[in-house]
Amino acid sequence: MSVLIFIDHADGHVKKASLEALSYGAKIAEQTGDTAEGVVLGEPTEDLTALGVHGVKKIHQVKNEALNSFDAQAYTKVLAQVAEQTGAKTIVFSNNSSGKSIAPRLAVRLKAGMVSGAVALPETQDGFVVKKTVFSGKAFANVSIKTDIKVIALNVNAFTIVSSEGKAEISSFDATVDAPKVKVVSSSKTSGSVSLTEAEVVVSAGRGLKGPENWGMVEELASTLGAALACSRPVADAHWRPHNEHVGQTGIAIAPNLYIAVGISGAIQHLAGVNRSKVIVVINKDAEAPFFKAADYGIVGDAFEIVPKITQAVKKLKGLA
Ligand SMILES: Cc1cc2nc3c(=O)[nH]c(=O)nc-3n(C[C@H](O)[C@H](O)[C@H](O)COP(=O)(O)OP(=O)(O)OC[C@H]3O[C@@H](n4cnc5c(N)ncnc54)[C@H](O)[C@@H]3O)c2cc1C
Image 1: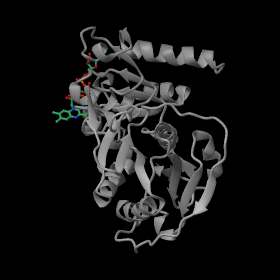
Image 2 (image 1 turned 90 degrees about the horizontal axis):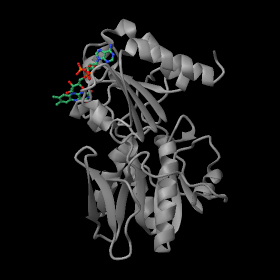
Image 3 (image 1 turned 90 degrees about the vertical axis):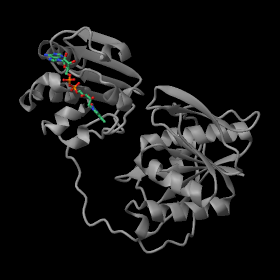
Image 4 (image 1 turned 45 degrees about the vertical axis):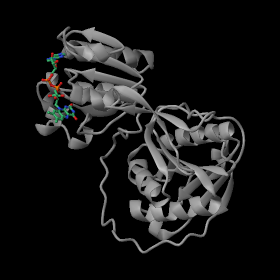
């Protein structure tokens, strides 16, 4: 029996979130005495054998032109074939946008119990119990999966990538691939920016910045740190920043290692999308701003004075100034 891990990729490269899923799946296999195998749809340019360092012995690869652009329905059908033919008992996804759209579909198809938002390895001594976040990360629940086949979607940044030595064997998998029901006519990418969901560091700003003309200092801090940019919802609603930067309950949920919030009050709807960040730094002139309760580090003061000083300090540290 195997633990099958879905390997997500974009622009030829395996996503960091999938390295976490691979490490997590390999640990489950270790716990349950199964083998850890990966599955990749399409053809990333990266050397897939190197993923063996994360604990997978074998990677099933399905090469088909129809799989070159993401199609949740087509991917689900192919993954179901791989899962069935390889006898996978546990299937692991990252709970990123791809995982969120495929994992539930696959669970239905395989009549499998599913947990999304997993944050820890399952307890497998007596049953199969997975810890997950609930209520936008405000609490945890332990969920017991009772079905033979289990599907888990692991929260991004919830599990440390494990690397040792080893190479994975790449095995070509011959799957029946339906003609796509939808066709991607064109796609446009936000230029030059670090991907928000994959970023290790995010610099985010809110209405405290007063207007779009003041974003220069935030952009400079972000580029000095190699960070992605984010914003609060009113900022995107007012068209100060594009909507793809809006984080929160109704925006993108992120979990970077470092989240720097500038002039954001910390409303519950904003926190819902950022409270899984490892370290939160809040810069706000109001010492009573609710965000300080969720912050690891807080700076009470005027962002217009503090942000340029931080940028200068980072530049100095990096030998850029
Ligand atoms: C159903 C629903 C869904 C929502 N979803 C989201 C969501 O996904 N994401 C989201 O962000 N919001 C969301 N909201 C809105 C949310 O409730 C807040 O209104 C919003 O997050 C506030 O944005 P803000 O902190 O930028 O602005 P404000 O609340 O106006 O806060 C601005 C902050 O800047 C500080 N400030 C002002 N000047 C300075 C300065 N010079 N230096 C430093 N600090 C300064 C102020 O002290 C204040 O704390 C949602 C609301 C609803 C009802």
